[in-house]
Length: 235
Image (tube, rainbow, N blue to C red; front, side, top):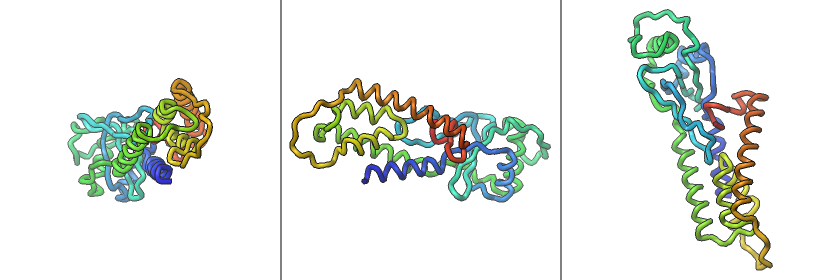
Protein backbone atom coordinates (compact mmCIF):
# COMPACT_ATOMS: atom_id res chain seq x y z
CA UNK A 1 0.00 0.00 0.00
CA UNK A 2 2.92 2.36 0.64
CA UNK A 3 4.13 1.98 -2.94
CA UNK A 4 0.68 2.53 -4.41
CA UNK A 5 0.09 5.49 -2.09
CA UNK A 6 3.38 7.15 -3.08
CA UNK A 7 2.61 6.61 -6.75
CA UNK A 8 -0.89 8.08 -6.33
CA UNK A 9 0.48 11.19 -4.59
CA UNK A 10 3.10 11.73 -7.30
CA UNK A 11 0.52 11.22 -10.05
CA UNK A 12 -1.99 13.61 -8.47
CA UNK A 13 0.58 16.35 -7.84
CA UNK A 14 2.03 16.00 -11.35
CA UNK A 15 -1.41 16.18 -12.93
CA UNK A 16 -2.51 19.19 -10.88
CA UNK A 17 0.67 21.21 -11.40
CA UNK A 18 1.34 20.27 -15.03
CA UNK A 19 2.00 23.40 -17.15
CA UNK A 20 -1.11 23.99 -19.23
CA UNK A 21 -1.21 26.26 -22.28
CA UNK A 22 -3.29 29.38 -21.79
CA UNK A 23 -3.99 32.65 -23.61
CA UNK A 24 -2.39 36.07 -23.60
CA UNK A 25 -5.65 37.56 -22.37
CA UNK A 26 -5.80 35.15 -19.43
CA UNK A 27 -2.21 35.95 -18.50
CA UNK A 28 -3.01 39.66 -18.44
CA UNK A 29 -6.16 39.04 -16.40
CA UNK A 30 -4.31 36.96 -13.80
CA UNK A 31 -1.60 39.60 -13.56
CA UNK A 32 -4.09 42.45 -13.20
CA UNK A 33 -5.98 40.50 -10.54
CA UNK A 34 -2.72 39.76 -8.71
CA UNK A 35 -3.47 36.04 -9.01
CA UNK A 36 0.12 35.35 -10.08
CA UNK A 37 2.14 34.08 -7.11
CA UNK A 38 5.24 33.22 -9.17
CA UNK A 39 6.30 33.62 -12.78
CA UNK A 40 9.17 32.74 -15.07
CA UNK A 41 10.41 33.71 -18.50
CA UNK A 42 11.94 31.18 -20.86
CA UNK A 43 12.65 30.20 -24.41
CA UNK A 44 12.34 26.41 -24.14
CA UNK A 45 10.99 23.66 -21.95
CA UNK A 46 13.26 21.03 -20.47
CA UNK A 47 12.40 17.55 -19.23
CA UNK A 48 10.13 17.00 -22.20
CA UNK A 49 10.99 13.36 -22.96
CA UNK A 50 8.53 10.65 -22.01
CA UNK A 51 9.56 9.88 -18.47
CA UNK A 52 9.98 6.64 -16.59
CA UNK A 53 8.80 8.39 -13.45
CA UNK A 54 6.90 11.58 -12.87
CA UNK A 55 8.93 14.77 -13.12
CA UNK A 56 8.22 18.45 -13.48
CA UNK A 57 9.01 20.42 -16.60
CA UNK A 58 11.59 23.16 -16.30
CA UNK A 59 11.33 26.45 -18.16
CA UNK A 60 14.81 27.48 -19.29
CA UNK A 61 15.65 31.09 -20.01
CA UNK A 62 18.37 32.96 -21.81
CA UNK A 63 18.72 36.58 -22.85
CA UNK A 64 16.49 38.26 -23.80
CA UNK A 65 13.64 37.18 -21.51
CA UNK A 66 10.86 35.29 -23.25
CA UNK A 67 9.03 34.63 -25.44
CA UNK A 68 7.61 31.89 -23.19
CA UNK A 69 5.91 33.12 -20.04
CA UNK A 70 4.89 30.71 -17.28
CA UNK A 71 3.04 31.55 -14.09
CA UNK A 72 1.62 29.81 -11.05
CA UNK A 73 -1.64 30.86 -9.43
CA UNK A 74 -2.63 30.55 -5.79
CA UNK A 75 -4.27 27.15 -6.30
CA UNK A 76 -0.94 25.65 -7.40
CA UNK A 77 -1.87 25.44 -11.08
CA UNK A 78 0.81 26.34 -13.64
CA UNK A 79 -0.02 28.04 -16.95
CA UNK A 80 2.10 29.19 -19.86
CA UNK A 81 1.86 31.09 -23.14
CA UNK A 82 4.09 31.98 -26.04
CA UNK A 83 4.04 35.78 -25.94
CA UNK A 84 5.65 35.86 -29.38
CA UNK A 85 2.23 35.08 -30.83
CA UNK A 86 0.95 38.46 -29.61
CA UNK A 87 2.39 41.70 -30.94
CA UNK A 88 -0.41 44.24 -30.48
CA UNK A 89 1.24 46.02 -27.57
CA UNK A 90 1.89 49.68 -26.87
CA UNK A 91 5.29 50.13 -25.24
CA UNK A 92 5.02 52.72 -22.47
CA UNK A 93 8.70 52.91 -21.60
CA UNK A 94 8.01 51.61 -18.09
CA UNK A 95 10.39 48.67 -18.65
CA UNK A 96 13.63 48.24 -20.54
CA UNK A 97 12.42 46.89 -23.88
CA UNK A 98 15.85 45.51 -24.77
CA UNK A 99 15.60 42.94 -21.97
CA UNK A 100 12.52 41.21 -23.42
CA UNK A 101 11.93 39.11 -26.51
CA UNK A 102 9.29 40.91 -28.52
CA UNK A 103 6.35 43.22 -27.90
CA UNK A 104 4.22 40.50 -26.28
CA UNK A 105 6.81 39.95 -23.56
CA UNK A 106 7.23 43.70 -23.11
CA UNK A 107 3.48 44.08 -22.61
CA UNK A 108 3.41 41.41 -19.91
CA UNK A 109 6.40 42.97 -18.16
CA UNK A 110 4.57 46.30 -18.14
CA UNK A 111 1.50 44.61 -16.67
CA UNK A 112 3.59 42.94 -13.96
CA UNK A 113 5.09 46.26 -12.98
CA UNK A 114 1.72 48.02 -13.03
CA UNK A 115 0.27 45.34 -10.74
CA UNK A 116 3.25 45.65 -8.40
CA UNK A 117 4.16 41.97 -8.60
CA UNK A 118 7.31 42.10 -10.72
CA UNK A 119 9.25 40.88 -7.67
CA UNK A 120 7.40 37.54 -7.73
CA UNK A 121 9.80 36.11 -10.30
CA UNK A 122 10.68 32.60 -9.12
CA UNK A 123 10.24 28.87 -9.51
CA UNK A 124 6.79 28.02 -10.83
CA UNK A 125 7.10 24.27 -10.17
CA UNK A 126 7.16 24.54 -6.40
CA UNK A 127 6.14 20.89 -5.82
CA UNK A 128 8.65 19.46 -8.27
CA UNK A 129 10.97 18.49 -5.42
CA UNK A 130 8.23 16.40 -3.80
CA UNK A 131 7.53 14.49 -6.99
CA UNK A 132 11.22 14.01 -7.69
CA UNK A 133 11.78 12.75 -4.15
CA UNK A 134 8.98 10.20 -4.47
CA UNK A 135 10.39 9.03 -7.80
CA UNK A 136 13.86 8.59 -6.29
CA UNK A 137 12.46 6.68 -3.30
CA UNK A 138 10.46 4.30 -5.50
CA UNK A 139 13.43 3.75 -7.82
CA UNK A 140 15.70 2.81 -4.93
CA UNK A 141 13.00 0.58 -3.44
CA UNK A 142 12.50 -1.34 -6.68
CA UNK A 143 16.24 -1.85 -7.16
CA UNK A 144 16.66 -3.02 -3.57
CA UNK A 145 13.86 -5.58 -3.84
CA UNK A 146 15.10 -6.85 -7.19
CA UNK A 147 18.67 -7.18 -5.88
CA UNK A 148 18.13 -8.79 -2.48
CA UNK A 149 14.47 -9.78 -2.40
CA UNK A 150 12.98 -13.21 -3.09
CA UNK A 151 12.63 -14.54 -6.61
CA UNK A 152 9.48 -13.23 -8.30
CA UNK A 153 6.64 -15.66 -9.00
CA UNK A 154 5.48 -14.63 -12.46
CA UNK A 155 8.71 -13.45 -14.08
CA UNK A 156 12.44 -13.30 -13.55
CA UNK A 157 14.01 -10.32 -11.85
CA UNK A 158 15.25 -9.06 -15.23
CA UNK A 159 11.73 -9.37 -16.61
CA UNK A 160 10.37 -7.08 -13.91
CA UNK A 161 13.35 -4.73 -14.18
CA UNK A 162 12.51 -4.02 -17.81
CA UNK A 163 8.77 -3.77 -17.11
CA UNK A 164 9.29 -1.25 -14.31
CA UNK A 165 11.88 0.92 -16.06
CA UNK A 166 10.51 0.98 -19.61
CA UNK A 167 6.83 1.65 -18.95
CA UNK A 168 6.24 5.41 -18.51
CA UNK A 169 4.97 7.30 -15.47
CA UNK A 170 5.65 4.51 -12.98
CA UNK A 171 2.90 2.31 -14.43
CA UNK A 172 5.33 -0.60 -14.60
CA UNK A 173 5.75 -0.29 -10.84
CA UNK A 174 1.99 -0.62 -10.34
CA UNK A 175 1.89 -3.59 -12.71
CA UNK A 176 4.68 -5.31 -10.77
CA UNK A 177 3.17 -4.55 -7.36
CA UNK A 178 -0.35 -5.72 -8.24
CA UNK A 179 0.54 -8.69 -10.44
CA UNK A 180 3.52 -10.21 -8.66
CA UNK A 181 2.94 -8.83 -5.14
CA UNK A 182 6.68 -8.85 -4.34
CA UNK A 183 6.19 -8.41 -0.58
CA UNK A 184 3.55 -11.11 -0.12
CA UNK A 185 4.36 -14.34 1.71
CA UNK A 186 4.96 -17.14 -0.77
CA UNK A 187 3.59 -20.60 0.01
CA UNK A 188 5.87 -23.45 -1.08
CA UNK A 189 4.87 -24.54 -4.55
CA UNK A 190 6.20 -26.12 -7.69
CA UNK A 191 8.57 -23.81 -9.54
CA UNK A 192 6.52 -22.30 -12.39
CA UNK A 193 7.84 -21.18 -15.73
CA UNK A 194 8.64 -17.47 -15.45
CA UNK A 195 8.84 -14.85 -18.16
CA UNK A 196 12.39 -13.73 -19.00
CA UNK A 197 14.10 -10.41 -19.62
CA UNK A 198 13.41 -10.29 -23.37
CA UNK A 199 9.66 -10.62 -22.84
CA UNK A 200 9.86 -7.94 -20.14
CA UNK A 201 11.73 -5.52 -22.40
CA UNK A 202 9.39 -6.10 -25.34
CA UNK A 203 6.30 -5.81 -23.15
CA UNK A 204 7.50 -2.61 -21.50
CA UNK A 205 8.37 -0.93 -24.80
CA UNK A 206 5.11 -2.00 -26.45
CA UNK A 207 2.96 -0.85 -23.54
CA UNK A 208 4.91 2.41 -23.35
CA UNK A 209 4.11 3.15 -26.99
CA UNK A 210 0.46 2.19 -26.58
CA UNK A 211 0.10 4.34 -23.45
CA UNK A 212 1.63 7.35 -25.21
CA UNK A 213 -0.68 6.94 -28.21
CA UNK A 214 -3.70 6.54 -25.93
CA UNK A 215 -2.83 9.70 -24.00
CA UNK A 216 -2.38 11.62 -27.25
CA UNK A 217 -5.86 10.54 -28.37
CA UNK A 218 -7.38 11.37 -24.98
CA UNK A 219 -5.74 14.80 -25.10
CA UNK A 220 -7.33 15.40 -28.48
CA UNK A 221 -10.72 14.37 -27.12
CA UNK A 222 -10.70 16.12 -23.73
CA UNK A 223 -8.08 18.87 -24.09
CA UNK A 224 -5.21 20.04 -21.89
CA UNK A 225 -7.45 20.80 -18.94
CA UNK A 226 -8.03 17.11 -18.23
CA UNK A 227 -5.19 15.39 -20.12
CA UNK A 228 -2.20 17.78 -20.17
CA UNK A 229 0.09 16.90 -23.05
CA UNK A 230 3.08 18.50 -24.77
CA UNK A 231 4.91 20.86 -22.38
CA UNK A 232 3.08 19.37 -19.46
CA UNK A 233 2.45 16.21 -17.51
CA UNK A 234 2.81 13.49 -20.07
CA UNK A 235 5.59 14.56 -22.41
